[in-house]
Length: 250
Image (cartoon, helix red, strand yellow):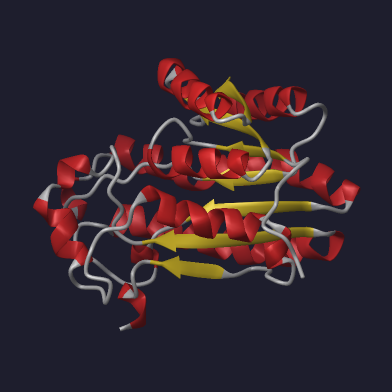
């Protein structure tokens, strides 16, 4: 049987300075991984790292601005350096989720959403997965969303970007899976994080539509991500796992 233990693994988690990313970083470190906490805000990143180290875990902060190809390549290089020459697990969690009517979306918003939600994961996989394949081992987990599965007014831009990520997950599973690299995704439902705090009652209203009837805690999403990254999921390739309280099941 595969194990949830991540001892000896180097895990790069993007968008790891808060919310789901921070919870994932903490859980993976708790399970033995050396976690590279990537994000734009150094002070928040160092706080996450300090919390992990305070619990006896191993973590380092790595600055990451994922909006350009050059910055993504730099992140990949620095992560490999901090990881002692390798990255075993990549969690593509960083992303943005502006909502609003299609006609009110600016061209800049379109570029920003696709740069962060689609191009950045694409570039990171291109930079890191080939070396995983050469070693014959690796795991990539992409963080998508339940609204990549069905249409929601005001979420066309965000939902479509994550629908692209879902297809990339399956294509990468076909491409890298034969060489030992498993690629999967999770689709969170409404989750109570710093990033969604501004949604107020709208978050609860969205969550109320699902069987669970409540928003998720970040740690609940992190558990699914850590599972897919571990040997416990050794026969799971190209899966897009809903972690949405049952919303897309009904």
